[in-house]
Image 1 (cartoon, rainbow, N blue to C red):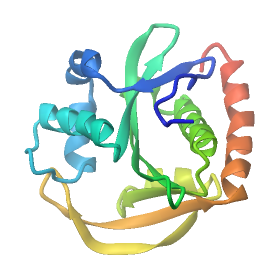
Image 2: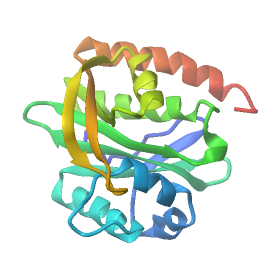
Image 3: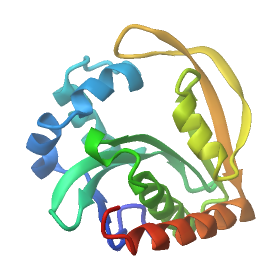
Image 4: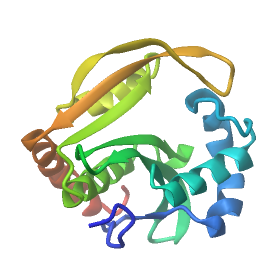
Length: 199
């Protein structure tokens, strides 16, 4: 199954490939502020349009896939995520650039995103799923470690971010049956959250 295949949805959200029709919604979201502190520099510059175009090109070139997080009850964009550096030969892929609008943080929607992305990674037959985080992003690192991901190490002064900082990157991964175990754990969480109207 391709990473961009349809069918990525829970009772609360739908993940769909990022496309030109999402540009205005991204412009109007808080993703612009998030970009400065969480995105590496790219050759095209540091505007939101440069990053948006870069994400669309990733999909065209087959070296990534941006995803829009759509809140189903309102049919609107509330977040972003991405598959990065998919390598079918070695059956590995990164999950990254997860962002949710402020009002959706703490509601459990991030569990829905991670569940759907791990589900699709398994359907794509991944043997290894990776996350790369700036070392000061302790909340995101902790969230992924709670899935059972192993912290493998730190790449020192690896990347320059859009805000000019040089950052150390922490690498975490799930491999083999660990992916299925994490997805199963998240599935129970997602089912519980979905059953709660105030989630």
